Image (cartoon, rainbow, N blue to C red; front, side, top):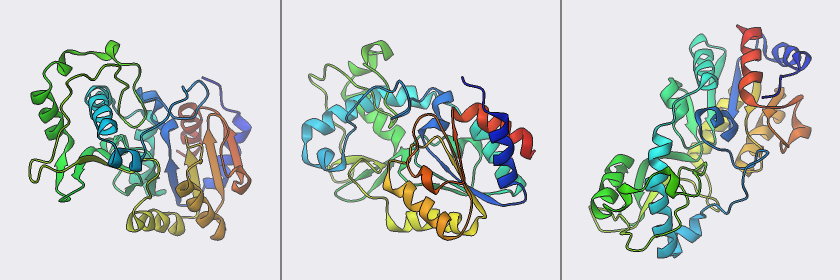
Length: 277
């Protein structure tokens, strides 16, 4: 793990000191919890599930839910790391106004963050696309286990890899029974924003309000290739708030930032925490 440049951390601390700031987080915050990122160096090239694909193709839904059963067990074992805990502590101290996260792993909530907007939803929730009934993810996991007892015998070695959105790639799906809504028999979908879908307007407005009320914006572990993140950067820039980004690899919107720190989030954030207290 590369050592952060102390001079860059000093400058970041100077930009944040005396200000109440907002944070935007991406997958790079959760890598130390064992959850891979999408685009960081070494991340495998993959074609994530899209919203239109999920809705239109029964085969896509079958592949997603089979992988989600295996991936959910791995994702469920993940716990908040030091970065999640530090951010929650900053919120309790009053210097952090709130977090907008692109992650769907729920680790910020587990760490105790309260002023949180999960832009892309959460894997712990499931919704019926037909009647809009909501379910706890565990209830759907139990349904999958009952109807596919053979799947419960598979382990991590039977999956190609865990993906950042919580599903795993399963090579064989013969006989898999897709879970359905127990209210209307309709199509179930994890309550997350897939690629090709848009963040709900009211949810984005809450995130934008956090950024607007803040005096600075700290972006952690996001490549900022998704338009939602860029729009939050633009809000901070319009407000005249300094923007600091910390990310492994190339970060989109870097020209908007007052300071760009390239490197892993965990050591950089720990060093920043030492400087800010």
